[in-house]
Structure formats: structure tokens, C-alpha cells
Image 1 (cartoon, rainbow, N blue to C red):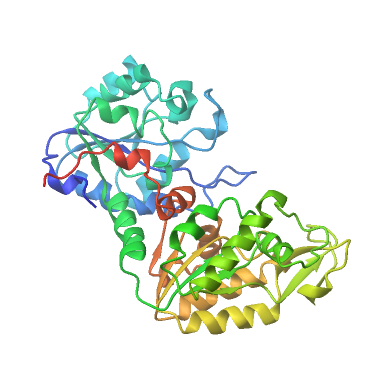
Image 2: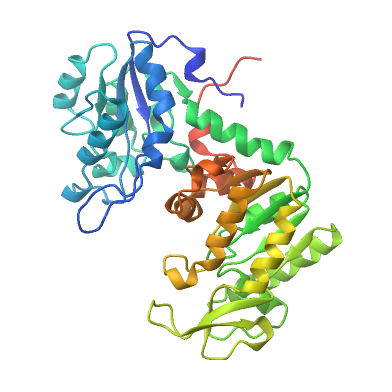
Length: 397
């Protein structure tokens, strides 16, 4: 972590614009927040700044309004929850830029907190428009990126604004980078990577970049079908990335050459369709019927994976083992989560749907670290630079 953080600068009495990731899940019917983990994750940064009498201006996106105002995606519900957690008022600005917002900012006193309206209501945000970034920068003296989950996006509030204000990392971004960098630089062995999710293509770069660091690679989820196909198994109606079969074969060959233990499902749960009403059964991978599809890993695979993970000192997990949104197809994902929660190993959850599953099961606090960034953590572990991190000021020397 060679970037300056809020600890390295004087924030007292300054207007500090903090880019947060308050892209929280909302209940489709009530609009209520169903998981406030991302709000809580940035509390250390907010408290650090208010304790030093900074005037804190928070900005975030929520979902994908497409550059226009969408009433149900306003951030008042976020401000309300943050206010409850902090025990102090959190005001909401009428917009994210403009004269009305500037007048609101002028009235802030040291220790006050203001949340700007959803910045994706403006097309200039995702376009990384310079004039939009300048309008944001006019609100503050210092810029802080504490939105690790959005740091792989070259957006105005992530990258553009850093050209107009001193730009440093928040405490969450600092922690994310230290933890993820630690897995790459100095993991305790044996080190296992548990990979799931729908697509091989989402995980290719990570698998390639970590192949020389892991001792075991366990593959479940929808992506396992492509690996099974590469081993000439018939996978029925399971979605297969045909253009990635050759690559899956190459990864398996490389794992063998490096003496990495690559484990695939030996049995799976299959169903006639992906729905809660569908018939489902456990079956060996060599006996999948043509009209059925894989929806989870099977009981023997859960046992095999569990045995392997119990001997490991470091485990990185990204991607569910099945269609975990449907309870009868969630057994594999839940079994892995419960196992990791009991282990004394370093357990790191790579954000996204895996983090959601662990949080839903109320096991997040039993893990060593749960990343707030699914796509960002994968990009980082792939060895790629994150635009939002690159834009921050470097430490001297």
C-alpha cells in the first residue's frame, strides 16, 4: 500500500469529499435496506474524519439509474440508516452538484455529515466527464476514496475528481488492499482457492494469476460445467462457455504441472429447470441426464471439498457453489460458508454474491475478512491495476 491515506494528511476544519460504496440491496416491495454491510464498512473512515472536526461530504451511487433521476433510487434511505448507526444527523443534499448543493455545503460546520444525492443520476459520472468531476471537486478541499467496490470503474467520482483535489485512500480501501495484497504476497500454506459462480470467463484472470501461489483449487458453481465438459463429461442442459473449454483444459493441465490439487465436483444436484418448484436429485457427474442441468454441488463433493479445506491455512472464496438464491439449491454454498466460519484458517470472502450469502447466514463476523468489492477484488487478484487506486497520491520514497 504505497498510497497516502487520511492518516497522512491534516483534515481538521477541511471539507472532505468521501466517495463511498453505498450500493446497498433494497427490498423490491418496501424499498428498505436488506443488508447494511457496505454502510458499516465505511464507518471507521467517517468517524476518523468527524472526530478530527472535518466537514464530511459523502457521495455514492445506488444501482444503475442510467444517468437520469429514478425516484426509488434516491439516497434518503441510506442517510437515514447511517444516521441511526452513527447517532447523529446525516443531511441529504438536493443533488450531487450545482449551486444549491454548494450553498448547502457552505453551511456545514466541523463534524457535520452531508450525503450527496445518487451521483449516477448524472450521465457525466459514468462517462468520467471532466466538467462533472470539476463540479464535484468545487465542493471540497480534499478527496478520499473509500469505495473499494467501485475502484475498478474509471468514473468521474472515482478517477476524474483526483485531477482537481488532493486524493487519498480511506481506511476501508487501505484495509482491502492490505488484505488482498497479503494473499498474493505472503499467504500461509496450504493455500486453497474456492471458485464458483456462473462463468469461467469472470474468474480466468484470477485463476491464472494465482496458480503459482495456491496449493489447491476447488471449482464449483455453474463454471464447473465448463471444466467437466473439458474432461468429456456430458453436462445435460447446464450452460457451458464453449469458447472457454480449451482454456479450462489448459488450466487443468497447468495445475497438474505445478502440482496444484485441482478438484472438480464428483457429484452434483441436477434439476429440470432453475425454479423452486423444480424436481431435483443428487447424481454422479458421469450420469447427468440430457434434459437436466447442474444447480449445486452434491453431498460427496461437499465432503471432498470440506476435507481439503480443513487442512488449509489460507482460503480465498469467490462465487457460490450453486443457485443459492433458491433454498433447495443452496446446500453447497451454505455448507462451505458454515465450514469456513468454523476453521482457524485465514478466510477471505471475495465480495459480491459470496459476501451476500455469508452475510445472510450471519457468518460474516466469523470470517477473517469479507471484501466489499466483488469485481474489484477479482480485478486486483488478477494482477490488474484498479483505476480508482492508481489515481490516488503516492507516498514519498
